[in-house]
Length: 273
Length: 263
Ligand SMILES: Nc1ncnc2c1ncn2[C@@H]1O[C@H](COP(=O)(O)OP(=O)(O)O)[C@@H](O)[C@H]1O
Ligand SMILES: [Mg+2]
Image (cartoon, each protein chain N blue to C red):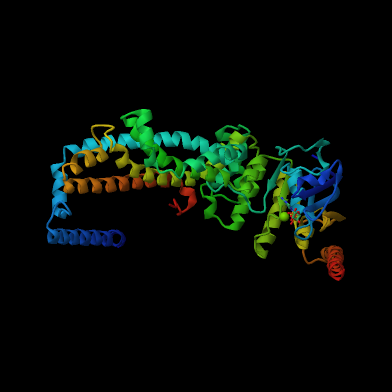
């Protein structure tokens, strides 16, 4: 499935009256979360959205997921505009968002219950994904009994179980320690091979993006825009310390540094004026 | 070894309680003996004997009171639960119902007794109406809070997993989330409801009942020892109700991991 994001703009306003006709008049009460964002994701592609916090990454994910609607522009899945959540897309949230009253198994079968899959079939599918993410033996554990990494595995299995074409992941490894994080990245790539999903992965870690992505979208803050698209053509599994990896790393860091400098200058100017 | 440890644990939980109760009984016995007036304070031993003397009344009265209580609590649940659910989930319903609730809530249930008798006459329904009022508000408020405070992240997770209608979101996300709070509301409501039993039965809505017997018979005849016997019964029954309720709901909420119910 192909995904297109077309001149997407999202303005959070605390005051609805600011919208006059078709023109957005913004005062201090308006936050332009993202402005005129365009990109496309091919079927089976692994795309990373990279940017500092507050640049609008979550906003983009939520709009693609159909949890929020754009102020202008649209998201097209195979040419059809997104109107709300759908079975072709699923999200792995930053805060896991597991149902604490359900066991691991029941969390994973949740999506299948909504589509009316019979119980035996549900559990068979759930067990398949439990194996895929390596959670055998924890089927009947409750979320409060699991570590952060294990919760993240459940969240991934739960999203995969409804077999979406597009998997949206919003800083999924943000709460893991560096070692675990590297292992999870490798595992995610393995899962990606085995399931051939399209993955849109949000992160603010440069290394993570270069290790995972086919394509990196570098974002800038205030207003959130896509500054640059970088294709990463290295074969997988990538060596984080290889020369090629470092070249891309310095290129990405350069882009980000320019942005940071610009932001600092802006702050400075503001203070002077 | 294991058995000894468990025995020790059990002793550690029950021995202090047993000691304090014994001390309480002994002090009571001494003070009552010193006062020497059974119309002011009958001796503890005499109250214990009363349990035996009243053995014919006690079961009938308990059953009658539990019937009043059960009816009141059931009505409270049948109305407060669906109403609280709607108030917690739909802002509009809350805005509409909450002002009425907030005006009625501070009125003590006992202030409704004249109306209860006017509407339902001297029937068990009148008594259960008072108990209903006592249990209704804690249950309603806990229910709507439980529903209203369902984390947005859980609702959104459910939505992206294909749970798309209000009914399904309420049934599969908000209700399980609210359940511990509803249980707490039920527990508080049962406590308040039980406190209303005595007053609700004072006016002879039935020919049995703990409250009825206490006021219209024992108190009328200056049988303070019997009154105290029934007071102790009221306390013990409430304790048993609360403990069984906690036992039943505790096993339903394993997922909370230790923290079962907050009062
Ligand atoms: N519901 C909201 N109401 C108002 N402002 C919001 C809301 N959600 C996000 N924002 C603002 O939009 C900007 C982008 O937020 P977000 O997409 O969460 O960034 P990121 O995920 O990259 O950290 C931030 O400045 C944030 O304060
Ligand atoms: Mg974010």
